[in-house]
Image (cartoon, rainbow, N blue to C red):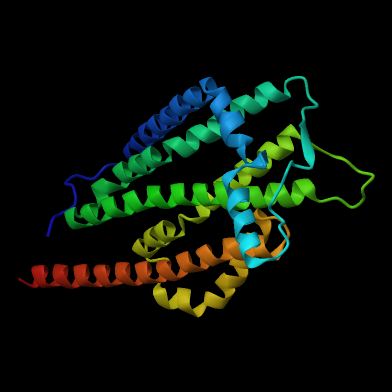
Length: 279
């Protein structure tokens, strides 16, 4: 079995190393943020305001699906029943800046995970490093899948439901720019981070905080939390909450398997170490 890196660092030395990992991570975010800032037309007209277009791919697919079922064509839209309004002098400029940083964070996230792995890898055995590289890869994939799921599924549902909801025909919806952007950014980031559940469970299991028995015991409680979380990040309709709940429940069940595998590996490692000491 491979050994951990030789030599122990002091607490201050660990902080210094961590500081440089954070500096490099922030530099990556800044780099991608600048790229996104310069690509204003693509960032806003194509990506941010894409779900506002009735021809957005999600609406087209849902429209065809509801037509095939012969039910009310809720998603077959000719135009969005609202307009986006900017009410502040610096509203568009400040929105441009912070949206660029959010996009920069999303694009830099795989690199941030890599920097995190570089920070913790010296404390791992060689076999653990090989296994953690796989975790690193799937962590980046899960985050991007979560972002895409939020953007192509939850965001259009939120915009279509909330933007078209009215309590009277006397009222015309003029949505504030910041409110619209916040909805898109919050939902997209939230789903991206929620999809990291298996990775979080992996590290908590490695630290001995979580066990598969505990996760199974409190499975019902976890499902209640998932339902509450789904209600928070989706519009208040059942279909949207179900669409979010299903993948999170699947991720929770996968996380139990991951947790059990981590525990078995640790027990096997401890048994091997005991045998080596005995020899």
